[in-house]
Structure formats: structure tokens, C-alpha cells
Amino acid sequence: MAERFGIKRQTVSAILKRNGVTPHWRRITEANIDEAERLYAHQGMSTARIADRLRGDPETVRPHLRKRGVRMRDPHDRTQQT
Image (cartoon, rainbow, N blue to C red; front, side, top):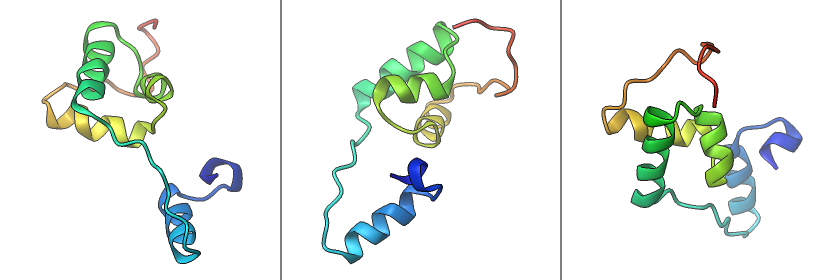
């Protein structure tokens, strides 16, 4: 919905909550983070592609990878193929 209406996910959440709707966001699990780390650090996949694969958001994936100490690549570096 956020993408469709050009607003932030948090705004969608606030609107839903205000109208009595409980959103069912997928929580990222430790297993998801393990997979994200493997895909990013060892296979060179972008956070955007990882988020698509996990049905999540790149802005959710990135901080979890950083927290694990994964060295983040320049997001505009197109030298690695995924």
C-alpha cells in the first residue's frame, strides 16, 4: 500500500491502526537474517533483492546486517552480479 500511494510504510501502519485494523507485518526472524547475511556477504545479492526474496523491505534488512557486523557495499556499485 505504501508503494502504491507513495507514502511511508509507517504512515500506512498509523492509518490502519487509527481505523482499527491490525496490520500483519512479517517479522524478520533470525533464520531470515542468517539467509540475508549469506545472500549479501557470500553471494553478492543486493539488499533490495534480498528483501524481495524475504517479502520484506530493504530498510529492514540493512540494519540487521549492520548489527551483525556485515560490511555494507556501496549501493550504487554495479560491479557484482547477483
